[in-house]
Figure 1 (tube, rainbow, N blue to C red):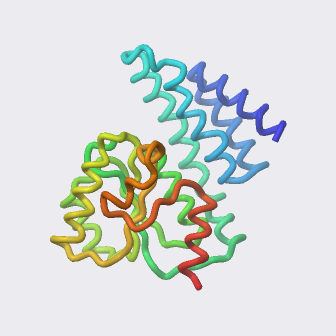
Figure 2: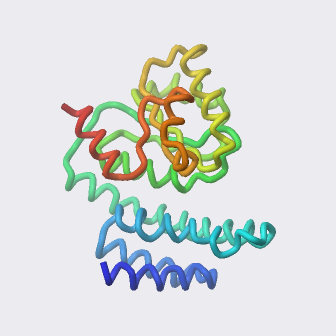
Figure 3: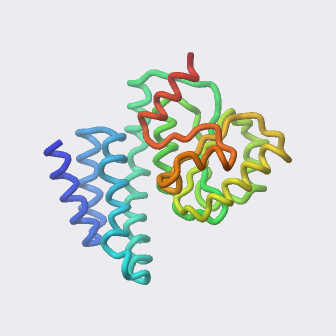
Amino acid sequence: MRLLNKYYADFIKYLGEENKEEAFRCAMQILKETGVVKLYEEILAPGLNSVIDEFGADSKELIWREHVRSGIIKTIVENSYSFVLDEREKIGIKHNENIIVLCPKFEEHEIGARMAADFFTIAGFKTTHIGANTPEDTLSLAVEKLQPKYISISVTNYYNLIEAKRAIDKLRQKDNYSGKIILGGHAFSSDPQVYKRIGGDYLLSNFNEILKFSKEVNL
């Protein structure tokens, strides 16, 4: 834990300096020593969220700082995929079902969804990450093509919960989707039960919950 704290301090320093190269090197070292889950949950996610604490009082500066920081972290996540596959093999769970991971319309914060997609992959699911700002009709086409048993919707901004609900309503009422809807993201932190009110079947907030879910549906 002490070593991880040291790494986090170094990583935050490099992020604050917009030093992509050193932040990347630091993250890759953490990845090799601790694995994907600790890197994502204890380094990258807090590192990304810290930008609000640092610059939240200045909305103009916050925007460009957040974009730069997001770009650095996205590069790190994309370069972690071989480790994701290795960790999937170590866990040894394999599902035949597909899961689609996405953000609803107007939700531009996709890094949480991207990390969740990797967590689902490690937990043994066949995962398709669609990305940010997914219109309802686009989601319907993807569901028709891929026939997923599960759909995971990540919502960061609380105000985008209404778009998540609209997407779920369309899936259920117009597309006759009978699979399970999994929800996650910062938007549910203040009221975890809201996932039920907008039509979700599960709320999964971290890797341990995803792994537990994977083991339960694999029985």
